[in-house]
Each structure stands twice: as structure tokens, then as C-alpha cells.
Image (cartoon, rainbow, N blue to C red; front, side, top):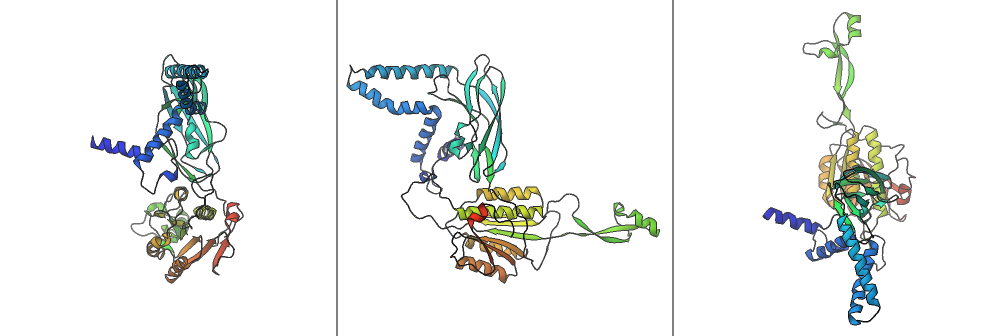
Amino acid sequence: MSNRWRKLRENYLNGPDWIRIPDLLISGKYKSPTVMIFSWLYAWYIRCFTLPGRMIVMVSPLLFGYTLLSVRTPIRILAFAVAAIFAVDFFFGLTFRPFLRIRRSAPPRARAGSEVEIDYELYNRRTLLPAVDVELDAYFRDKGLEFVTDPASVNMIPGRRRQALRARVVARRRGLYTLPAPIADSRFPLALFKWSCRDGNTEKLHIYPAFHPLLDLVLPVGKRFQREGTSRVSKVGESLDFAGCRDFRSGDDPRHIHWQSTARTGKLIVREYQEEYLSRVAVIVDTCVKPPSFSFRLRKTLKPEYPQLEAAISLTASLADFLARGDFVIDFFAAGPEVYHFKGGRSLACLDSILDILSCLEPNINKPLEALTPMIMDEITGIGSAVVVLLDWNEERKLLIENLKRHGVALKLILIHGHEETMIPEEATYFSPDDILKGNVKRL
């Protein structure tokens, strides 16, 4: 009972998963139980009533209250007519409410601004009654996703029949989107009530930042190469370089015998290999932004937008893509609300993991570089070269760059800022956020 109560309380404080709770209702990690009551009431209100139904429900107290004040008023006829319409819609909607088995298939990740195809397979578990006027996952709009056309829908599914549907959605902004368990709504017959059926599991959809591939990248030359073993780097087959041929020795692998040289010399000759030396590169991205100034003006979104940070994350994705295509070993560092340190290998999975991290990065109004510096010094000293993407230039960032140089790290410094009057160090390469987001940066 204790575990069940704890789980029930946790689900209640997390709020309804089919809508997005405004950030103004959440103060940091604390969630008020009182505020959650209003969130749950609002969530069920939009889930049980259509838009016309919600409008009538809002007017009904005034309508029925006025009829109580005046018995002979003709408005009583309108009030009884509205009540009759609601009763008819409730009765037939309850009778034909859907009982469906829903299977949804969505990709694990997609690019910001690109279309995502979501496939559904529906099965009507009823024997005689059909499922009428069914619409799927109409609440994606409340989760930050937009439908390209309309949500997946079907007019009727006969009893014990299957139906395949497809919907296309697009996410304008990067982020980690939690898709709630599939919800099928039926608005039969008068489209006042919505009778929903829920089945399946929640899914995660990583929307990684939109980026433009780099054509050329000049990397800093460090003083050392990192030698890695087989447990460190993802590879196909043996990661060894051919060094030459020599005479056969006891214990050599017979599979390495070079038969052409053996036939020419009359004695056994084997190929000799040496372990491959790999170039490791550290990629460090700065997420520290200035907090927005207080303003009474209303915004379309509750979360403020930071074009400078989005440009830095987009450029970092381009760097990771170029390095992954060049068989580099990437050590990725980022400081957001928590410090990320990802040690990659040489595979497409490495790039996917970095893009997943970039999709989840949030702006930080604190000083993340202070928490990142001790970790950087231990790791990057053994790497030798790093690409640093900064959002501004101040004493804190200057101290970080000086410490890296003091440890013998070869640096490529990239500064992204929207104001040209910002002081720029001589060794830094400067880009404006607009140039990066528009794809004008092709070479670094």
C-alpha cells in the first residue's frame, strides 16, 4: 500500500501527460499540489469536451441561472433544448464509445523542422458495435508538436476489424518530446462530448537541432595522439594498421602468412601489424546565457528564446557530424542544468548520442563553466586538442581558455555573439547567430 500510494502521489504531481503544463505553474523542481489540481481539472476538461461543447459549458451556468430567476421567460425553452441536446449526445456517445487496441510506431529521433511520420494500427475489440468518428493523438498540439495536415482519423471501424492510419507531425524547436500513450477520441454523434480510449505506452522523441554540414574544418594540432584499446573505440573488424612483412616466428597467427612473399623467398613470411593511433578531439559548448529582462509584453511562448544559444548548438552539431564522418574520436563536454560528458567512439551511434544530448540542452543563467573546469583539466590534458564554442567573452571564459593553454591543449576558439561591439580575442573565429542558422558557415 505504501508503494502504491507513493506511486499515485508521484503521478499526481507529475501532472497529466497529454498536455504541456505551463512553466509559470512550476517553480523550479517544486510542484504545488494545489496547482496540480487545476492542471488535472483543465486537462480532463479539454479531454472530455470538444471546442463547441466547452463553449456551451461555459455559457450554461449563466443560461440556467437566468431561468431560475424568471419562471416565465422564453429563455427556459433554450435552456431545456440545450439540456436535451447534451443528454442525447451523452447517451449515444456512451453507447458507441470506442474500445480499441492501439499500436503506434514513431521514430526515436528527427531533425528540427522536418516531418515525422507516425503509423498507427487500430483494432476494434467490440464484436457488434463499430467505432465511429475516431481521431488519434489530437493532444500533440499541446505537447509542442504541429500536424502537417490533420490528426490521423477514420470515420468507422467495424467490429473485430483492423485499420492502419498514418499522421505527419513537425517539431519547430529542438527538444525531448514525451509522446503520451496513444489516445483515440470519438465525437459521435453531435461533437459535444469526446469519448476517449487509451492504450499502449509512452514514447520519447528526440528532436535534434537543425544544422548544415561543414565542407572543411581546420583542426588544431595537439602535441600528442591518444592511443586507444579495443574496449574504448567502436570498430568493425580489427583496428590495426599494416606495418610490413617479416620472417615467421613461433606463435604467429597462420592467418597472417603472406603467401606471395613466402613463394618468392622460399620461407614463411607473415604480415606485421601495429595498433592504430587515433586522433581524439574535445568539443566544448558553452550554454551560459544572460537572463531575459523583465517585460510586461506578452509572448507567444512562455519559454524565452535564445538565438545565440541555438546557433551554438547548431554549430556544435555540424562539428560533431564532420568529426564523425572523419573517423575522429569525440569527447563532448556541455554544461547545462547538469554537466554532460560523453566519450564517443567511431560509429554512427556516437553521432546519434551527441545529437540526443544537444536536443536536451537547456540555457543556464548561472556559471556552468566553473563546474565544468575541474573535469576538463583532467580529461583534455590527455587529449591534446579541443574546439571550444563560446557565447560571450568575459573574465570567466578568458580564465578557462588560459588554463587550457597552460596545460598544453591546442585550441580552436569559436565565438558566437549577436553584437559586433563585443570584445573578440585575436585567436577566436567570430560568427553571428544569423549566419549559422541560415547555413552561411561552411568552413571553419
